[in-house]
Picture (cartoon, helix red, strand yellow):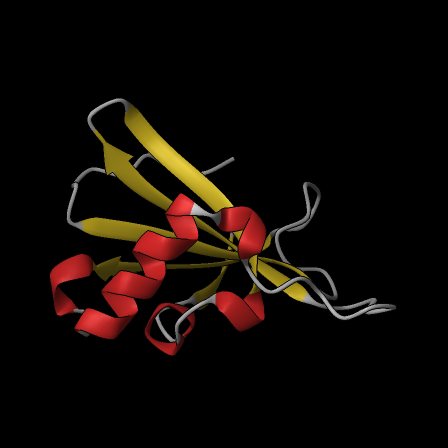
Amino acid sequence: MPRKVESVDRLQIEKIGGPGFGGSYSRLKSRGEVVLSDLSPADRQTVEDLFKNPEKAVPPPRGAADFFSYCITRQTAAGPETIKVHEDAVPAALRDSVRDVIE
């Protein structure tokens, strides 16, 4: 379940999948937060494109067993909006913001 995003200028990122990350029974979570205005124009455009067409994000390779996905959440006028995309579609600045935590 995505966490509430407090600011319209922030993205919350959660890495899920792979060997034990983000599962409903896992205490290990991988989360990060990025301020949109801190991203390069190219990364901001990539994020916007992902929200417009998340189904066009890079799919996992065929037969991939332990791939990661990222849930990216942003605040909109209508409330939080979350997409789930394959790790290869996520800009490095977002992936690099993620840190492992034990809950």
